[in-house]
Image (cartoon, rainbow, N blue to C red; front, side, top):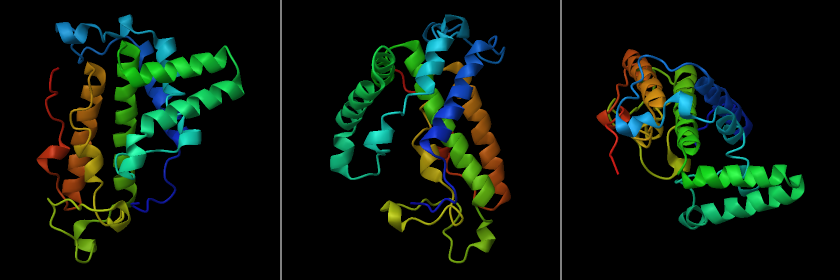
Amino acid sequence: MRKVPLPESDSDHMHRCAMCAMLLTQPPDPRDDYTAPEAAKFHPGKVDATRLLRMAVSHDLCEALAGDITPYCNPTLVASKHEKEKEAMQAIRKVVGDPLGQELFELWAEYEELKTVEAIYCKDIDKFEMVVQAYEYEKEHLKPLKDVPGAKTPLTNSVGAEKDLPTVCEEPLRRFFISTNQAMATPLFRRLDQELRTRREALLQERGWGVTDPERQQPRTQG
């Protein structure tokens, strides 16, 4: 797609998600405000950290059989994403056997439903790890704007089929940051996400690219 050299694997992703989940075993950071009613439930002391860790290390296990279906895949495939992943987890459950197979299926289903604090944290972690990886790709591979012949102006963003997009060396990975600008629900990961975006903006400014406002973290829509 963007011709990233040695791109992250699903296993890489889930391992770092698991490491992020372990942050919830730490005392809360004083910079994170849990006093608001909508934030109180996310206080680390109220999170089942063991369950979150097990969810984080297995939440994308379905992709071993179903593949990594993104919003930019074939629309028919995107529409069938949940059903294909459910079938994959049912198949994995049979191979693994219960009770572990049942637990893996239930953790996946809980993550998909996003009704528990642990599932919401896991979704934050999933999105945060994605933007961390995108930032690392840019830091490692993105050339300065002046070194890219025919590059677009700093504040444009290529659109079109993935196969037609510039490589990561030729243009920032803007869509990763635009698609997640309201994604983080928990005080901890909103703070970490903001810190990451600040670092990224400095990097892109230094290389002559700049960022668009939609790439910055936006207020989260309630409801």
